[in-house]
Length: 502
Image (cartoon, rainbow, N blue to C red; front, side, top):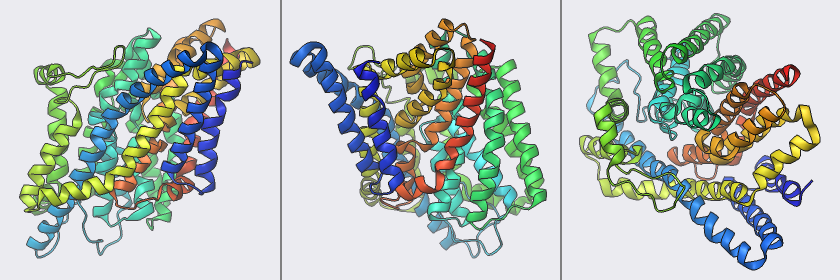
């Protein structure tokens, strides 16, 4: 086993140990992990090529890591700004209305409702509304929508943060399936084929998510009766079935967004039976979130507009790294909608901007540290060395390491696309070398890395920043860590079956 393979696990294990112990929040753990990864990468380069190679590694990988972090940073600050504008809008709406409408606001904070929270509305929010927003926009926007809606229902603090994570449950198709499309391109297979296989795996993941969702709902003060559990299970099965059918008969870009939208409309009419007054109240309360989702849908689903925005003023300072299209990136449009919401709320944009900066700096620092850490793994060869060591030691059973590496990639980068770029070539080479089906290995990589991104420090720190909870990441990890088990268990079971058939 090479020195790189021996050193590779330690930075990640250090981060997990620090987060699990509660001694450090995500920022401290990220900086510690980054320091360990930099030290390991620097030492490996020093041994291989002396000081010139070590300095060249730093000069090459640190800018690359910062550049890869930028698209995430460009949504965190606008997201916090939007949330504060939506809160101001909701406060003004409440002041103008003698009594709140019967509708559930999609954004903003409202006083806790007098009646208990309807479990049916909670499921729709966590598994349809927020995943729809994430499927269309990506970059954690679904988490922002979920947190705003949960606050409007009356849920605050840690319960809202944990339940909001289910907004990421369809992330394999997030941002119009960019991660799945990237993984398919690297694996050399059709995106629809990879999407379908991933959807079949997602059935197992969602089956294991549901008991955790019921547990977290009960902890939040929303007990789920046996009848509601049967209802949740039936609609979850219908959702995943429609996602699989959409991948089979259409393109993965809309394979989650379309089923979520259809089922959301059906659930609204079934559960609410709204009259005109209720519809108007719901539309008024939902205006900020609906405007945000509508604008982002337009920029991504209207072909000529999408093509124009994605090709204007594209920044690409580093060769071989993805460019950044500022007019296509969601952050610009989040800011535009937030300014319109602030104007409607008669809130001072300067005050909102200052509040957003105060609330977002920690999340930005966490994101930067972990993206730099991921780039160190990739650029130093530690990720490749770890995969090679698994293949050498485990041979036929090395495929069991695929979901573990995928989990590491999703956790560190917060992106299925970045994890695919880091690990998919290794996974496909490993599968072909062992005579296994590379398509199913690609699906395991996509499913596990995408689902683990919900627990990435970037998502967690974004949530705490939006709710203004400061350094609450460690408490959230202690509560939410079981969410890693469904994708890992499903991925390991699939990898075991693939190994037995190889």
